[in-house]
Length: 282
Image 1 (cartoon, one colour):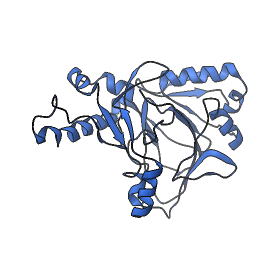
Image 2 (cartoon, helix red, strand yellow):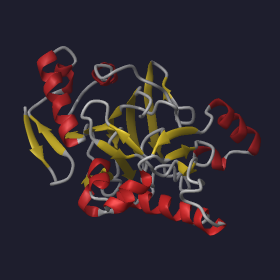
Image 3 (tube, rainbow, N blue to C red):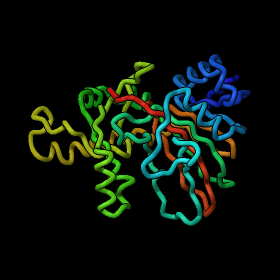
């Protein structure tokens, strides 16, 4: 297996490897996992794997989880089918920078995404290195956010298009989660800027140390949150991947954000994702 770095900040392509082999080869899987921790997102071409192999490979990282809105394959629980069709012109859940399911108390550790069908042009996906985003923050900002915690909501994103009864039921099933604004990666020990499109507000900003008058808290807190969320938009932190059928991306959800670019004309884009259960951020 060769590991070919794609940018200075994030991403590498794995060449001369088949993920089906890594299901049973401990040494090969260990090499893939080490590359993932180093590069944060890995890409592979021409992976003609079955759904059973896709699920079995992802399970080497941990148990899989479904999604309350996107459906799983009926024969492979945890294999979420993200299918876009020409009849879904207003389905815009993905075209924003986000870290998957931070509205969970324990967001996913990562995911393995395979392209089944894609447009002839367009429909790329981008990833951003949120370890580097934190490292490059001004020191006074690092000091300001060191103890802050953010609230992450599913009702403000997936629930927004639902009738109020369904939205409130979704919130009851998945209450807003609270996470540190700066989390520590459990395997590398690196600090990660951990806010994204699911983060609605800071829960512990309004203290005497920060707020003298109302303007300090509002819009001060909202402006700081937007500044932090916008760090993912910096091109120097990003990699962009052009899909082909049987291409695969594996990413560390704890240290990245991603953005599915919806720039393609009316056509089908079919992706299948195995999301891996993670731990509670600290």
